[in-house]
Image 1: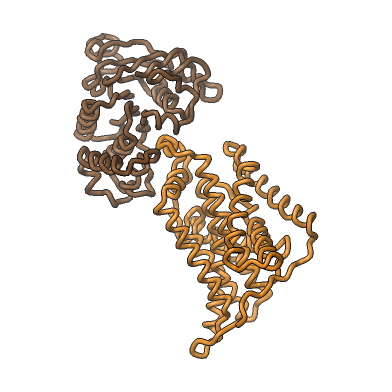
Image 2: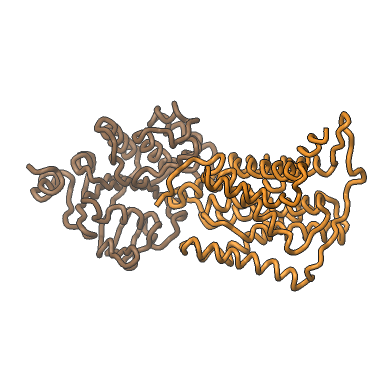
Length: 235
Length: 291
């Protein structure tokens, strides 16, 4: 479904990704784990068109999307839940969800999907008229996910959904990620919480200073000594 | 009774400031640029309205619409030609460019038609009417009506339409807006179009109210509208409306008290006071600047 081929990405003069390649197949949850500054968010920003690779190619459903504008990537069915949620704090929960469906024209479908998002996140329905800036961190994360789902994505990119959340909320969010995946949405999940990420993912990649250093099934990585030592908190 | 008349005059003057201030505040809200050429778009609106009414015998409403549409186009051209490439430049570079655009517009108009003022045609037969012994200027009521209608229309656009929601999203977080599929460049252009249309409308009603227009007429109202936007809290739409009205009323009161020579100074005294006492403006939250 998604094929990243040997990309280099720079922030000004600093190279953030060095010849990175990875693949996501339809229906999978693939996770990318790595420390702060490894380049995880950079990769997602490149996939969604906020950054452009200097070299290499990105193929999605058979056509090249590297260097395309963010809006055409959203239109093609890739939604990005950004790091730190980035909800529109000056707008209501409902307006945020409407913006998620910005490129869609099918009013009926939008209405149905909004109901579906409210089913997934009943808390959002309770607060649908509230300004999203007044929500708790966990609720904002739900909103960011719901907003991404409103675009009716085939592939959803999630950047650190567990960041700064209470353990119970993290569990809740990961349950919903699995649920969304079962409904047929492919997930590329970037996480520092390697334990949690590996427990829901099918496959995983480990990123270090802009390069993939390890990949395999989630189970394999969970058992790998290197991963245990570096990301799962020792033995 | 005279006070009521003065109050009405102040409010109608204030609503002209408010219309101009809205353009400042919307543009600032979305790209953090003080568009100093905005007062000159107001001047161009006044001239377009003048030609439409005096030379081409158009009625008031079509003339107003024409001024608004042409000013919207001019605003978008200014943004695309001068400001778009400076999106990632330092703020001071963009600000200096805005001042350059302002001078360019002023002296281009002078180059083509000279600096002589023009007298606006009168469009009302009865200059004033009587309500319970109070003489009310017809034009004041008319200006107020036009301004209120336009401001309601703006509120509707910003809160109920797709483009308005896109504008609010971009002004809050442009990258997050991109991830929604919003075309940020077009949204910024739309903001310039709407702000400039309001300035154009303000130009026409200014001409009708003060009857005298000239190529440098945009400078002072432009600066005062900027003060109004800061007073209300720059970037905040209701703030610009309130700031404009307060400024208009203060100026009229200062004149009515016999200090008409101090009228223009009043606006800038307000600016100094607000910057010392409450820099975020009346409606502004004291938010730290995002880095």
